[in-house]
Length: 136
Image (tube, rainbow, N blue to C red; front, side, top):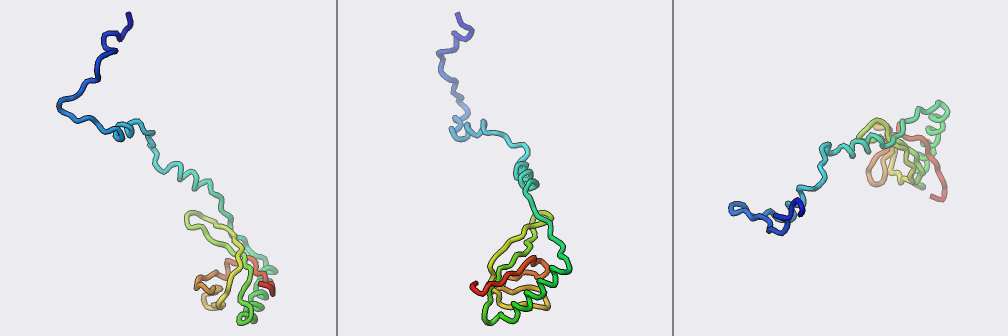
């Protein structure tokens, strides 16, 4: 004779006071518990790599100044340039260098920035390289 033979074939008890719990609520009881909500996101954010902004040499600064002068002279004729510049990260120290072909509206010497056709700006101090190509 088995240990539970006396109850094995009985119906589940039904409460007279409480309605049965809906199936979706019963399933939620067994869902995994996340005691540290957001922990995985925080670990992932900490592990995300950012670059440090590079300090330019005097030679590189001179090269950029010459490229900006050439760009200023050509602005009415050819407004496009391939620019590599630093974009600061919004969440942590550092950022990343991006290279894009930009369509430049003007150079704002007061703000020290390139004003693009879409009215966004790239700070001159964040620029690492400017490449001009007559075919752009």
